[in-house]
Length: 399
Image (cartoon, rainbow, N blue to C red):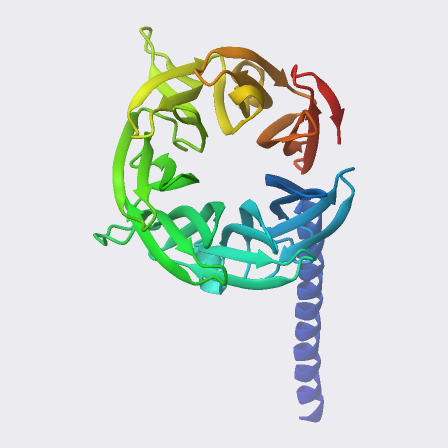
């Protein structure tokens, strides 16, 4: 009897030991596989000048769990990094835009707040204010429907204008009137002063915002491929809305005021006479009452779009974006173009140094143009990049 019990115990012990070994081997494999498969990335989505340098925002996965984390980084005029901080709350997150205020920096983006949101890949919009040393002064989240994000911020005298969207998640039907594109005004300590939503609760978004005199102008899209240029008063009441048919799926992504109106940037998607689908980089000019005036397209026989525009010397417009080389494996090149305020082209140049090069923002710095973005490499990683252009659009420096 004793020998029988001992034999059973040995069998049970052997089984447990084998199970433990298998589990340890599995955990080791998973850990190794995860480490090998976690390709490093560090992107720059937007940049703003301050008195002695630049502040940039984006995201990277430089953490033990390899989550995407929203980041803010500060550089001096030599582009030497002064600090970098990750927004470590929740799970995956990203900053899309940043603005400089008199006492610090305001970043906007989105993040997964909890495990349930992470599992469903649903995000909340966030606005975070930092002091000049990178300390968080306040962080506030916003969510009206399932999936939300803030993508642009503008500093005004008494607060911050922020735009983005809050929409239903994919495959969810709903009739809420709270969703769509959002324009929200925050005060200087992060409280909502007023908010205004517009458009389709599945896809509408505002991508950029500016204040001109006593009005606020926003651009984005409504339903799929319908661009928007909307005008608000300073209390958030809609004054005028203009639609543009047809943009690409991102809609209008940037705007700037010139002497006699606003110019917006994006891409036009259409079908030509031979039934070919065409996507061209696009600039459209409107008067200050959002009436269409004219447009210009850039076509290099690929898929092109302008992501960001700014006003530079002599009231000219500088645009940066991307071109997808369809005939060469859908690789991305950067594009930079200079136009007069009446949309007459001055010059346009392409940039392709790495496997993929993305241009996300541009600023006028010391009589040159500083472009930021990121480059992707053969191993799947991608890293942020600074490129200095002369006013003649010649590359002076790459960092």
